[in-house]
Image 1 (cartoon, rainbow, N blue to C red):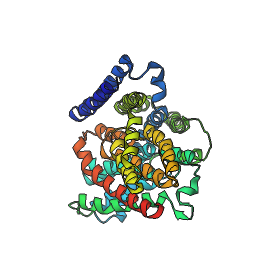
Image 2: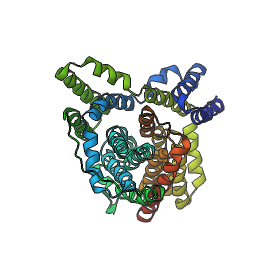
Image 3: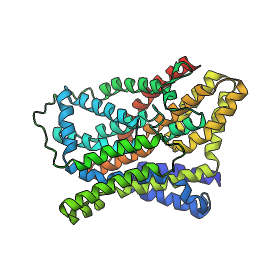
Image 4: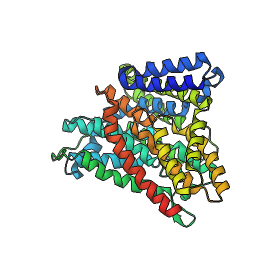
Length: 422
């Protein structure tokens, strides 16, 4: 059964690459086979789906159309265009901007808030938005590991290793993982300068867009404030972030409807929701839940630890780069959940502190999803947004930016963590 599960899993990824327009159907089809064949027991179907992420995406998407129509993304675009000397630096600034926000709120929410600004900029400059939106997505994923509240994997590490918010900045008298992530982020700047070296056409913006409605922006800011506040609540319900995004967006929608009673606008918003992205993610969650149930993730974790043996540097290296490769195809949440107790046991047997391997795991697992367009929920949402704008993103298009981005960021964090925490 395990071999059959792996074959189907590989076939699914091949299908996602070959038939990009059929992604939701392929993922859901494989998920259905998993359920029918018992690879994923029916009793676990509900539990393996990350309803929190789906609620966040669905909830935020309800407000995105209002946010775009309010002209606020255009105003932010005007401000950024004033300080950027050329197109290349517009892309770099947008990438860093999304990364900064993502360090404190969920990656998917960041993408859905920042991407409309990137789209507005590209429309103003008559640019292909694909490279910029991909940069925004991978930057959002990158910075998620910087703080305790930036990503689910960070929250998991904090809970397992009893780390508080400040431990991500300074721990045991040494700079912590925040600085490893920031070094990685800085190293992506020269990567973007190389990738977009031909985009030197100057940009100017003398106009200042007039915002027509501030309520969507207020509700977007409410997302940020409430998500940050919720991150400090211990033992909060799993659906907290999703409910925050959904409630904020519903409040915004109700306000807009009461203001002008425009039923057609509400119908348009509901029609424009990216249902393909939601369905694709649902299918992927089930498939990954299936291979996790069959013990594939446990087997991968055991292989990594066994390959490292008693050599700390080799073990650390395999954990970092093995996690990058695995997380490119497998959701990093079950993988990190599996690896944390494994690493705790290994370090205890070797008589060393576990933080070197914990930080290496978080670095590799969080950034590995940037290699493929379906490696992280944030990437899937970004590609979905581009598809709505009429731009199909192939694996090759994404990998052109995602792979060098990932290699630079991981290398910086890998070296920093080793030399400070070995």
